[in-house]
Image: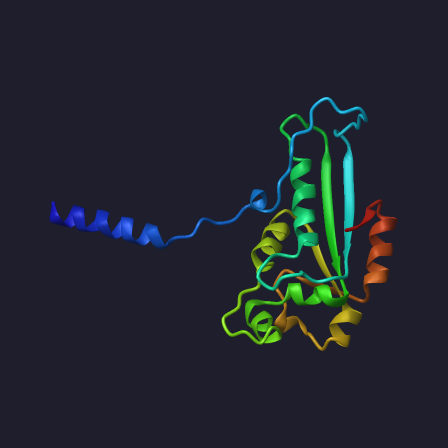
Length: 177
């Protein structure tokens, strides 16, 4: 009996330290809008490439432009949408590169030991939803940031300009937020 109580107490102790894993729903509100005047057939293909050039305003909060990608995905996940296809890509350049850093490089960039990149988990979630996470190679070289300093799901392209053209030719709409 003591053994069972000890195991039970240990389980409660350990579970008190576990953190809830964030999900797509953890990032930004999505509101149900009823009785709209402008009707859109949501049972179609939606393809968007998000062009992000500016970093987060706050070093301890996710880049709201990255959050917009999560909201875009969530907007099109309603159960009544049977035939829609939602695809997204995130193309990053300029100062937004710093929001793609791994935790160690992010802390170093901000000169603050133990600072964690608040975008890291969101980037992982977006990757799980097959969002292409692409960094402009020109920005990478200009800022002297190589792959070893980046979130592991980031892909480096020749440039943001050519990447945006690539996606546009594949039917994606460029969204600037």
